[in-house]
Amino acid sequence: MRMSAHQGLRRLFAAFPLGIFALTGCVTAPTSQQESKDGQPVQATGQAFGERLNASINTVGNAIIAPVQSGNNKTGAAAQDGSLRLSNLPAKDIIGSSSSPDWPRVAVNINKLPKWFYGMPPGGLPGRYSANDCINVSLTVWNDAKHSVNYDNLNVCGDDIVRNTPFKDVGLMWKSFGVVSGMQHTGTQRTRGPLPPQYLFPNKPGYDLFFNPNGNYYIGSIMMTVGYNWNEAQDSRFWLVNVPTQAEVARQ
Image (cartoon, rainbow, N blue to C red; front, side):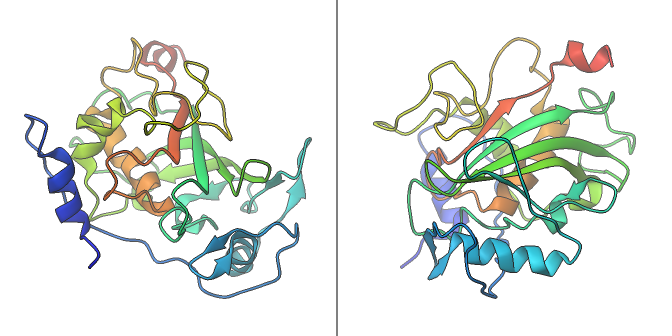
């Protein structure tokens, strides 16, 4: 019998002497099919990754696929203004719908944070954001060790916040997680993959207020959208590459 997200979280955090606040939620993956263009499918709930990706791109409607500089990488769907919204991300639930414990993997680079991010949001309360309260990120989704899709210039805004998400657990516990035992990693070097770094979040000076109050909501929403597995103690298929520090944001 599959354990609920709430049960999994209670089991995960029982060993920690911290107060845990958890809710549960899910994101529905697209189900239509198309033939994979790169010919390198990976099974995910009965569908190849390429099939699910292309089906999702067709749903977006104005999506484009263009080559990047190396390998079999492709760029993902972009809006007409050059940006992509989290709500239209073709790779929704890509981790959650996979039967593999290792793939796909998602590396997130935070490109830009608004000046208010390390303090109170414009709405005056944590969790109260408008459609104009956005951060800008880039995602690299690794189908396997050689094939990836880049989603650059992705805007995550207040109306993209995914409810029914264990937001507080992101900042309380996840920020200190490392890769699972025995998994290959890049140590302290943080890259967009395919190997994760030793620690999933770059816990260095300057990030003290990243999660509290705002990072919980934005990173938690990205995690939930791509299908982060909250039932696993440490789902090493999702990590942050780089985050602007408080000092860097202040200098913008």
